[in-house]
Image (cartoon, rainbow, N blue to C red; front, side, top):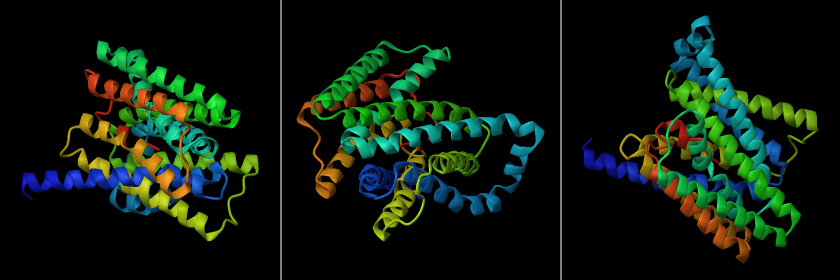
Amino acid sequence: MRPRNQLSLAWAAICVAVLAVSSSGPLIAFAAAPALAIAFWRNGLAAAILAPVTAVRRREEMRGLFAASGRRILLGCVLAGVFLAVHFATWVPSVKLTHVADAAALGATQPVWQGLIALGQGRKLGRLTWIGISIAVAGAFATTGADFAVSSRAVTGDLLALVGGMAAAIYTAFGERARAATSTLGYTSVCYSVCAILLLSACLVGGVKLHGYPSSTWLAILGLVAGAQLLGHSMFNYALQHVKATTVSVLILLEVPGAGLLAWAWLGQVPSLGSVPGLLLLLVGVMVVVLGARRPITDSPSTVSDVV
């Protein structure tokens, strides 16, 4: 295929991916099921879909992971799954507690925490990156502070969304190392499986209802699996073959207004006017972080595949 046609397909894939991940928040808010149960089914069904494909196409790779020589890599995949579970266990409930747009924006602070993790790993951050981090943190505080006037429930949702963004950054840090020696299919199969097992355990311990939902809720959960979990991530990974990672990272931020518009049109959710300046400031800060990093935080496909 000609390079120009490949580039056109990559941009089309990005459009599809943004729409897919933008539907995540509204679908979670719409689904009449406990947040932890939604998080479990989203990852459990995705893992069940990937498992047979991985068994056929990556059999030798999976055997190698469980051999003595591959246990260190396997540990990285498992730890990534642990923090992915923390991400979903905090971000999914946040959508139930605060506005979809607020949860999406606060969860999108992942590149900010990614930059701080990079600093802890001994990487030098540029001045522009620090400026972006400061702007994003100020925006996050402004958004959360504005929700004090709404309700303590909304503030709790904001804080959970922030923790979800932090957990996503740690998940990515572990995933970046594991992905250096594993395929996308092998890595995601292990990661989603570990995540699903932990979320299922939390549901069982907490007595969370896992079935008996109306058909509309099951359709919403299937939409999450097919859309944000599989289609969205796959399209972003395809686009990375033809579009710069930094560009893709910035375009992923379109999920925030996309989720907000879908929540407004479908669910009638309108963010409080007081939180709008903070949301805009937060988005500007995250964009500055992504563009200003000396080494783009999202150099690997695993970074953009996580997300909400």
